[in-house]
Length: 363
Image 1 (cartoon, helix red, strand yellow):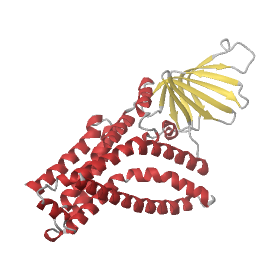
Image 2 (cartoon, rainbow, N blue to C red; image 1 turned 90 degrees about the horizontal axis):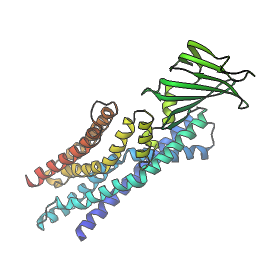
Image 3 (cartoon, rainbow, N blue to C red; image 1 turned 45 degrees about the vertical axis):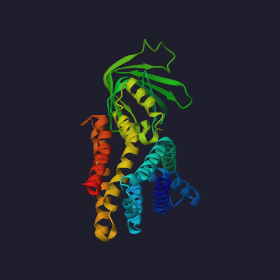
Image 4 (tube, helix red, strand yellow; image 1 turned 180 degrees about the horizontal axis):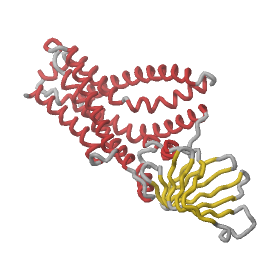
């Protein structure tokens, strides 16, 4: 166990060193960008934006950090001939990978349990803060088991929209009801329709029935019907979708409940399900990157082209990372099953790393 602890400690120190280096670089780059984007803000406010963005930016590059930390570790072990001593003692070099792989797995699980909720909170706060500073608005949206609720503003007041269900892109509402309120909260009008289609600057309602609530008469007696009518709106599909929030804004422990609410309300939760499964598969993928990096950098430096080996390891790791992202997109679009999109690339990467490693070491 002394040897395993030694390898594990060396790998963790490399991982920590690469993390600090890249986080400082990301922070400085983001600071320059945000200072250009918000020249009217004080430096402290801009720094707050950058600090809120850093966790999300780092979380996205953890695979890169894992590749660089693994390459740095095994190159150093090869140059100091420690791997030669390990093989000469009768132990397989593959056994020396157990500790780094275990550390990578622990980092992945810690990121899943602690890092993901932290990134979700800071990312959502960063998004809202940037919107408030830039003057952008976001739609008020609520999902419940009975349907969808929206709110939009206007020159005369607010409009609350309810729909039993909606299309996957939220461009069409089914069985909607529109409730218009004055600035003082007084109800003005209710509209019930068969469908509501969102177009540029307005909702287009079909088979609409209108009740005027501001008049001191029986609303039902004065109700009228229109085959097609337009209700002005400042909403767009992007703003409505933004109200759902990206999957990254929802902590992983709350995702199953959130997915259930979406499905009960009749909305597609495929995007969130793919993200949930991909997050669960992240630790496996990190272990695979360690094995792949080790397979190309564990050879003795005198008998191998070190530069080519490092380049091959990094390019292969990046290639598998992009394949994983591509499978993620295919899963979101429904072209492949969700479990296949989330778990096939990490498991395939793991077996590729093991295969190359066993071939080079024992083949």
